[in-house]
Image 1 (spheres, helix red, strand yellow):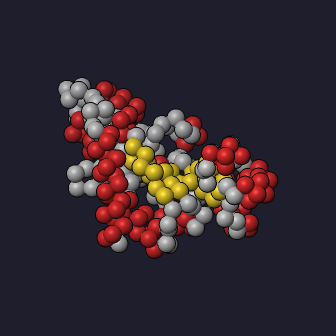
Image 2 (spheres, rainbow, N blue to C red; image 1 turned 30 degrees about the vertical axis):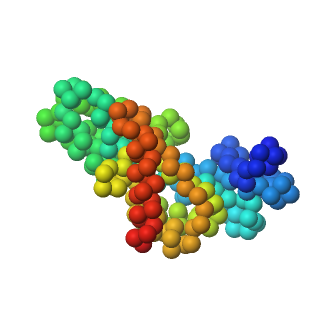
Image 3 (cartoon, one colour; image 1 turned 180 degrees about the horizontal axis):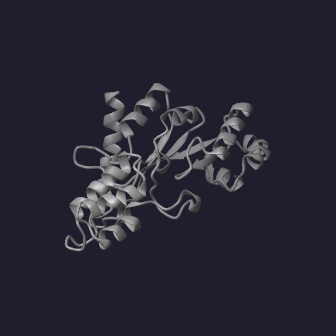
Length: 236
């Protein structure tokens, strides 16, 4: 925090190795330095994860402008990116079938074993099963940050509740199409909530789609993401 102050930064972001009890002990230092100390909420954690309920209790109890949260939109994504299969050769698997499985994985709560059975029932083979397990299904939540995406049920009210303690967010995304749609992350609803709650902080456009399709222009994607956010904000 001292180095951040010296370099002119107003926010220091930590991750959940900084426990709520330790964060509380650091509050007097943050206040003295004039630094906003924030914890990052990253998938697979969500606002309902017990430790983040502890952070929220701390924020409410202290009611300090110098404690808060950085919400990463990976915590509000709904499954694998729409482009997750793009880097595979077209003849290596049944892409139309796996794209349908990916859509079902992201938009429903069908258990993974049932989706595997569906692959076989619709003419898929062991290669399709293998790719689904490796590329579409996210790892168990206990493994934490082993994958850049998660099958998470969007928590709109949890987002709204934490928003009052947020000055900055990570606008995680994997792909924005030419019509400014971002599959897998319900930006329209989250932007509406931000505007309803009077959010006046910052959102960093954090593109991670290069993991899945390196042929997509990162510069174009970041421009689209910024344009999408501005469009959604103005439409609410």
